[in-house]
Length: 198
Image (cartoon, rainbow, N blue to C red; front, side, top):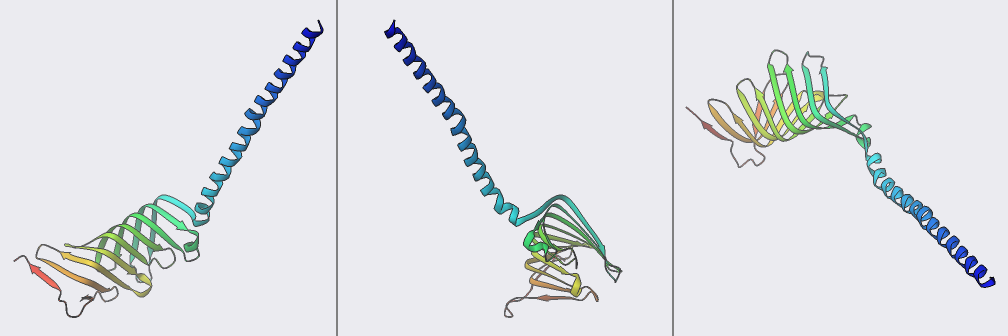
């Protein structure tokens, strides 16, 4: 009888120890893993939060200057970086813009990316820039429209096309007040290439 009681007590103690061990590993170990995973997630999110202030989809900006020129810009995505927020700059992707220069007509601009200043409207378009003006198409890698200085600059692999000609140059400088256009090569020894179709 005493032996049976000792066996029963031993089985009971082993069962209690087994339950405590299982409970410990199930409850406390899973909590540690969860905390560790949460720490990792927080660590990965913190740098993103510190860099990006906000991201918007399908954004539009409209403005008109003192000369009566209107400026419209649309982007598939706009990202405001905290560092740039102080400078009022927005990074745009999938950009379409319409510039209406008073008494000179509409200019349509398309590009993969742009940097837009919300205060001055100065915009730097880049990556596969396409400009359509009257019957002219201008292709380049960069277009800077600087409203604050009333100037524009088209540069990097510039090709001007219309029904009569193809023109290749390094830079096209435009005075937005007078409409004057200046073609310029980066290297003075190189010449602007003009091919007429007639």
